[in-house]
Image 1: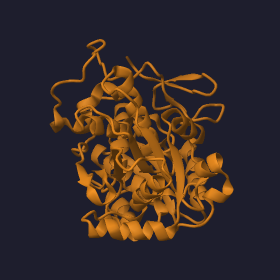
Image 2: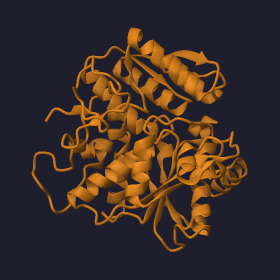
Image 3: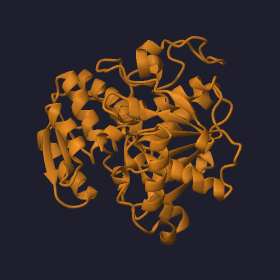
Image 4: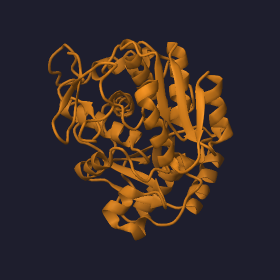
Length: 368
């Protein structure tokens, strides 16, 4: 089946093509139709998960749940799931991807789709990690890339983008100004390869849930805690676990918790008020998103999974970053908001001390 885009707000549908809009006419984000992707492929309903998985195929092991065949790849997928005794949790080491962040999951699928559609130039706006991933996978595909970044983007992330041959456009102002400038250029300059808007990117990040379940013997954890900006990993995990539960490969959905940066925590504000979201956290530069593209979907996923969102301040981020490094997990600062949030959630009794918890560590410290 050829996937189609649909708007889950107004019901409009769009054929999958290089000329398809990047968002609905009504302004909402697009997704693949509910019946377009599944874990069953062409084999019909399967009551049991597969006995054997070809992990050499990376995240494409789960190709029936992806919208395009493998075309652009650097061997991404199957990051380690390791014990983290200091946090009584398991860490999923998403920092070990080819470009050093989980964004490679989405970039591999999105650029594979762009290549399949005959796209010759992509545009993306990013604070760093997504831009590096899109630039790198575009280079792998032989597709030109134009990456819009904040003027103060970290040098290590900027170098990764530039060395992949992408054109970099620096934008003064806040993170929303970067997006607005990129969107204004899309109509005349190319295909919007957006990690916040593209359905194919979220199809890629959904594979994190498939891997976690498989690595745990098809037993979902009680809870998953992720950093939360635009929600690319959070919503990907939600969609992946929903597919697994729908296929009968896991018994229950885990509760999903998002860790936001204090002062840039719109999901926390929506659930708990502005006071709970207030403060500041410049250390978590990767999630400084005040207007997430899929805000409604994030709130729905939290409600449906029985999870929540919490704001993490800079002091807690720095404290847990030091703990991570001293425990052998060399991550960038934004990663530390998730272990910090786990501590807060346990202290509040939202996550039990003995519950099974998975925390993805989303970016490498080598990029800071």
